[in-house]
Length: 363
Image (cartoon, rainbow, N blue to C red; front, side):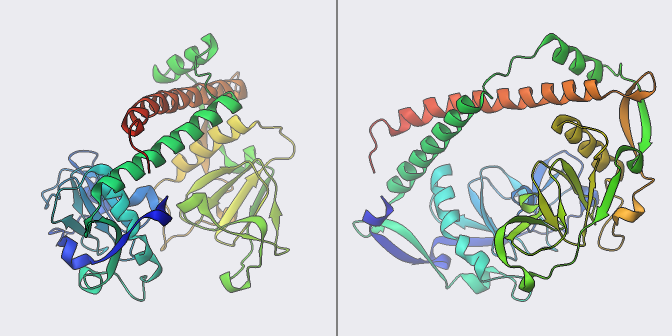
């Protein structure tokens, strides 16, 4: 496929113009209205949220590159923060969504060259090269279009096969699940605030393990952050191991449910219970409630440690003053089915579209 393609080398500065934001948009300006705001980082592909504050708007069909060299194609209008050194690349010629995805992925090598100690900028990359498919001495935009369409078809087919094999294509709500959603949406649930330590009989902090000391292996190692749900490496070190069906909360308050055994660094707290046989859905409910209870309260300047969280309170549904575990199970099951329904319907649409697109295209 790609090995049979003729490639051309092009200077980034010959293909794109660059632009920067004109207002220092902060988190306090994010209000859910207006345009998406792009910042540095991989979390949510760099999307900070939406704001309607007055700032320069960059058009859809362009590529953003942050100070770490992370490149993303944007199919929507957006604004840029200025403090994180994110800039926009606009092609000198019109590019489609698929062509933009191909070109932005061709820029991914930049993330290996830039970081805090050497921040990426247009001045630094405009003389660097990007390799693109060519035909008759010109960039082969048609190949990019067909290639990405073919990849989309493969990915959607894989998703379809996975949903079928796992039985996840069943997204019809039961009467109990529909009632749980209705009761939740119409505020017919009784709630109670309980402490973390009343829900979990084990609350532990991970152990420090520097990157240079991590030995390759198969144990997921969790540290602070949201990228890849905090899994930074797979190790074989004999560090403290934590059981599956646990919850991790890092020093910033990011919470994730773990359905696998893992190791954790000293910037991560772990919560589990050996006495109560919580199901995975109940643990997912606890995870969301715990993260909600500490949202916005912890940061670099005020880090959360598990020993400080024992008496933090989260809200849970109750029945006769006891935690209503059955309701938690049913509600999470209903929410999962709603998400599965969106995924299945999306895959059906994509399969139809990509089959039509690729019917006559062969790479």
